[in-house]
Length: 381
Image 1 (tube, rainbow, N blue to C red):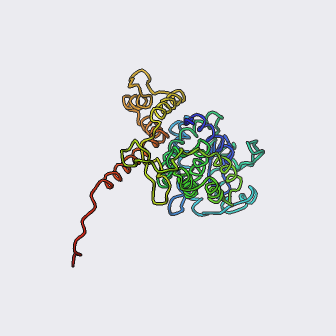
Image 2 (image 1 turned 135 degrees about the horizontal axis):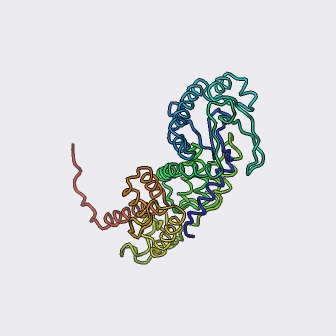
Image 3 (image 1 turned 135 degrees about the vertical axis):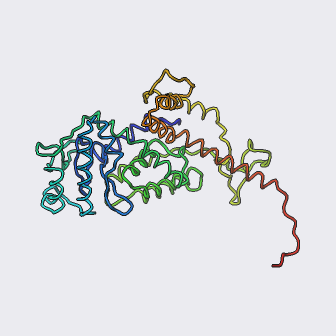
């Protein structure tokens, strides 16, 4: 089936909403991390486990809220002071707001952010509560978002996590085309929540299945094992539900061809185990269909994403038009955003994987055509 970018983005948002739930103001999670919208953290853990302001997320929030320079500076100062409080209470977790408010952590937090209130919400998984900050009259700064602003904030930061996910897929040797829209949404959820090791462990067997190295039954077993996280059982269950929608892998030959060495257009020769070599190493036979799919995807993406200047350039490629318009306008934010969108597109990842396979196939063919070295007397050292 052709890749459906719009369907993928809808699944991605739906899963994040199920796992995080949307809160249209700043709140603290059970670790005291200030969060907003669809689980967008405003401070982030560093490699040394210390907490620091996530400047990219804070800037995106300020942009979405259209904060003036004075309020931007105030927000950054508050979060900087609060990150110092967090670093005095690393990994402290609280089961309810009362316990947090009575703790030293909670008291110091309220000195910086003002009162913390318990607010009931209705989400995809039923009712839930959030520990809201920066919403009370006594708060040093009051912030709130509309549903549309929370959605815009999520979409602004999504390309960053898509790029991280692409790097995980590359390390796991899992081609982008091996994923269904559901599976990529599940892997995005893991990446979004910082569970990059878990995402890597899930992507590896998906790549192995795609190459024909394991069966579907083995894949399902590996997915259940890799996705389970006892600290977040509901999140794990939601992700596993999507991971079970497996992309059908290409049909591979089961018998060796009669003339295996007559060029790349023939079927691949049998490997040492008696089976056919995976066709990933060769150019795909349905190249015209692939190009049609890419054209369809680009058309959908062009409708979903506004152009910065649709009339300034007409290269015939929607993505290049957007990038050219951003370069013409000298808009660094737009250049960065469009470049990230192009980089994370499944089509770019697919062609990268195809190119690597083609080079590998050509190298093997050259090795097979080289004459065997003549045996001579052993060299003495």
